[in-house]
Length: 255
Image 1 (cartoon, rainbow, N blue to C red):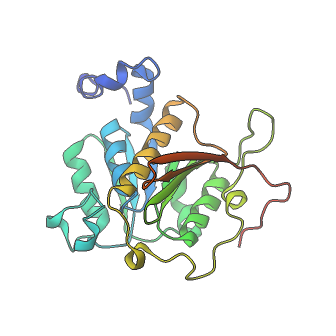
Image 2 (spheres, helix red, strand yellow):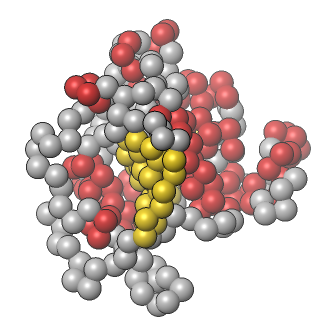
């Protein structure tokens, strides 16, 4: 798909950037991105990818909008309480950028679903809130050989990384997998949900926006994505830290 005159006007601030230009904006228009979760992390991801002109965006979530979501899930509003999050998010994205094609999947991510539908997409962003889905997304993206941007948030902290384990780094070593970073899922109940502990509303906005930025970098080929690096954010200390992680000599087996 070529850029139209309306595209050129809408994305002028992107096109003015030498690193992006018309070619980068066209790559955004032709990109197909699947976003897992239309909650706290997914909200800014969906809005910024739609605003950036990503041509096809898939939304996967099986939840409904509730009043307690609105403190942080800014893709929804009071008028959409009780609606499916996929439908609520799609309507907001259409108002923001009607040129974006939005596909909705009102279900949970699973390996079986991935076999059938993941080939429709070139990139995946995981904004889920549980380790089962995170492992399933990471394994599926690895098999499909598509980049995965994954993030997580706690009460006042968050993290984001990029996974491309099917490719080798500059030293010839394969990039790490999600299981190299987290070899085993934490025991049930060790990490309580935000419904039990609370979460500061702006925090998912910070991490979700970083996830959107990493996705845009991957699509356009600019910058240095967080492959093999985990970015950590401490909101109370206003501090970012980055740690490196590597491929294990004996990869952890999928459960």
